[in-house]
Length: 142
Figure (tube, rainbow, N blue to C red):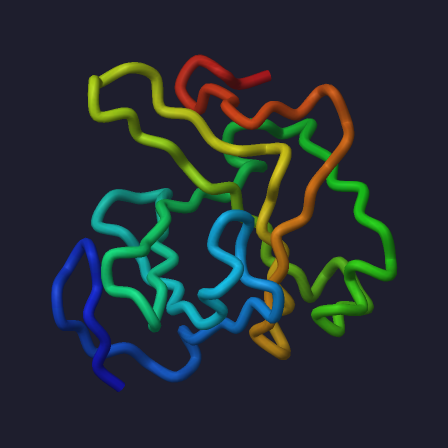
């Protein structure tokens, strides 16, 4: 399948890269279908909207820079994406890269939880005060 992407233009993607967010993402509730793509720079990924070529998010595994990160999510929320085991989950944080060159941050308060089997995802909202919306990635380690 070919899709228009913000970072790479027209791109061929594999069906296994497709993800569905039944409730969309916060602020983007109308966009439900995405493709998960490797970024040119590890350890980052792109989450590209299938419905809007201009909508794409940079993602990172939060455990790479915050080893004590914990996600406590209500079991009912996990049922929305048919997730019954943490081993089946992929966890990502949305990254913000400011245009002014200031510190790159990741949203630890609103992680993306993806069921690897069903390829359905959800953006959780955590209430733990330890996790910030703008957690520094570089210099923000334990």
